[in-house]
Image (cartoon, rainbow, N blue to C red):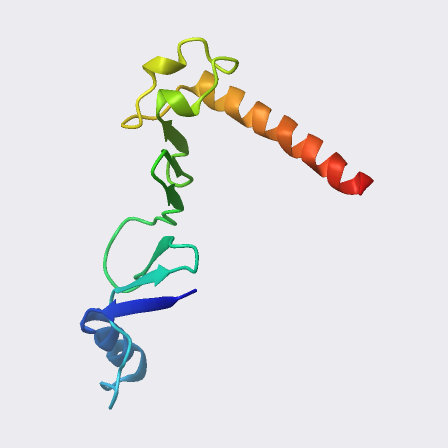
Length: 130
């Protein structure tokens, strides 16, 4: 990690939750309701971390991976969005029709996972032989 920058909102709900639980406002309450942190890595990558447990919102773990060539989302709906040039014609014959602005079909997703498992198994066996 090269450096990180982190900013908070003011604590509106956090102070109120404290008062409800303890009966009085705290002398100091340093946690903001929403925190955003940007991390810059040694290899020039950027990582964004968000933390918010104080404001009303639907439950979400928001596990996402976003890159220049694709996108993956884990929750609440799992899916992958890839450009056609990121998928081999071995996986799907009409790979050039894929758009990074929409999730791949269930069939393509399953084919991708199958191929990743095959590659992972091969690489694991090579590692064991060393």
